[in-house]
Image (cartoon, rainbow over all chains, first blue to last red; front, top):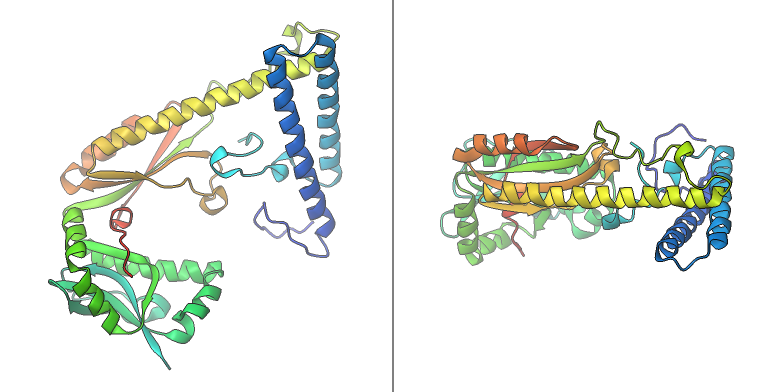
Length: 98
Length: 255
């Protein structure tokens, strides 16, 4: 990891950091998809077109995915903020925890 | 070496003194049109021509330094007289085209200068700050969950409350920003909203709800500052900057 400050949303293909940067890119995409699926689940749960068992199964799956994301982030020294995407006028993908 | 003419601003009066401009070059004036004065520097085209500029504009240090010099000149002129600033790095092929511009667009410049005479621009930025009652404390206590033994369902319920809370906070904050902008605009001659600043540039990570610019009569500046103070609080922090040269209200196509 480079101690040098650099724009947080830029992927730098530097040989020393390429592994971490690529990991960050991949995890960001996975996290984006996970968030979308989660929102879709919440929406369908609110509409009532899921059975209780389906809700439970989806909930457990998403929860485990979240845990797995946390583990991967730890292993590569990333914080949830590193995976945040700025969606411009839509705000950021994840809540900024200031 | 071929030279160009870099234009900073147009005004009606000649200043007796003016700070140096971009690349530490001296600033001079060109008179023309219906009593107008253009503030310019002679610049080498090997640095300020179209091709070199394209490269230089990607160099943030160069841009920052050039912008500082540009604003230094504009601010000096604006402090003394009504001024129509021109966009950063507007370079003409010599003085002829600048005189031509003053002739051709003279009435437009006069209209803009009349509009900003006796008025100054103030910036107001509104940030959402975490309120004391913990607006993001959406995590319900685990004991209260009615889904004991169904951890997946409990998880989704928690996420639902969280997303809803966020959405609600977002909507309230946007309404608040609209309200602030309307109130400030009502006290101003003109108001406009700019895009929220990128946190990596502003160095501040709170959510910027409003990045407004307001053209305010000199006589009403105190009133404006007081209103801006009153509109803040309750989870929103207002920051007033200025006075600025009226950048937001004088942009006209100079080509």
